[in-house]
Length: 244
View 1 (cartoon, helix red, strand yellow):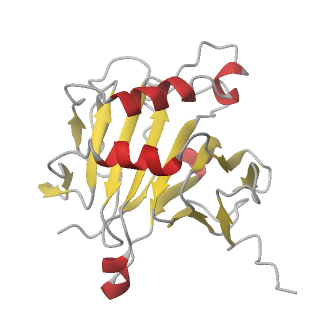
View 2 (tube, one colour):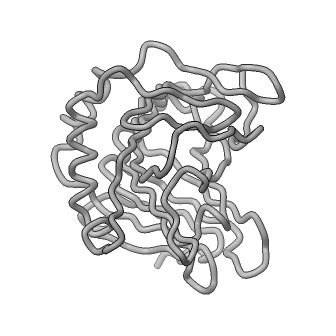
């Protein structure tokens, strides 16, 4: 019998019919959590359609006062998004496959079970062409997204293509689980809910060396509910990492 991983530093394979929807608490009181589930539809066909609309350029962020290229390809759809020192404008058009994802996201229980008018209206697409491309540790800026009276936010994600590790790290030790690694298999949906953005950072872990070169592309889509104007003053740094 294989030994079960410790709950404070576990790595869990998800996204198959053998692993249905499951919640992972990030804090001892259960107020910060991640829920994962298999996505509907044909993962390979969705991946093919998403690859066909990959942005031509990687885009950039501001780090320590200078503009540097993102370590991945990225597209913003629906509403402009301010992070990592600048406001990222929306793409001129929303591809049909991304519009379909947004429409589906708004039929899930994370929307329909609420009575506060919550609706996803923004999608961020990230294209990681190999293991060297990643997203650094960060948490979402709650000044832009809908926050409940209890300080809770909801971000829904979908992962297509290569399996990659999403890592959650606590911002403070008290009352939190030390670290959680989830291996997102192709066709995995996930929701970062509750107070996760206040208590933890999340990242897609970089895979270095030859191993990283051999990892095939991965595409992620994340849906958010933006409120107010898009012209928020950007933070100096939200996302960390060594950019080239």
